[in-house]
Image (cartoon, rainbow, N blue to C red; front, side, top):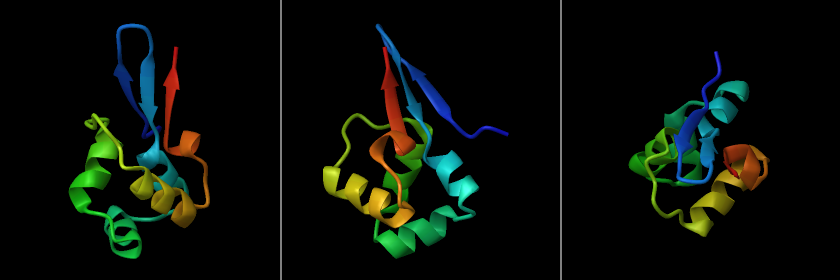
Length: 78
């Protein structure tokens, strides 16, 4: 089952893929939260696509921990 959240915009959409990455790597939200010192609400907002802004330091922490790139976590498609 794909765990990617699609959020439509006027001229494109965002794909929020963090839940899929966590599933593929068999990492729980709680483990990610503890290991990266990231607030649970922040992680859930990224998973659900409920974010307006993202802190680049949080994004860097997640990418470093998950050994992935930004587009592995979320992506904008025109």
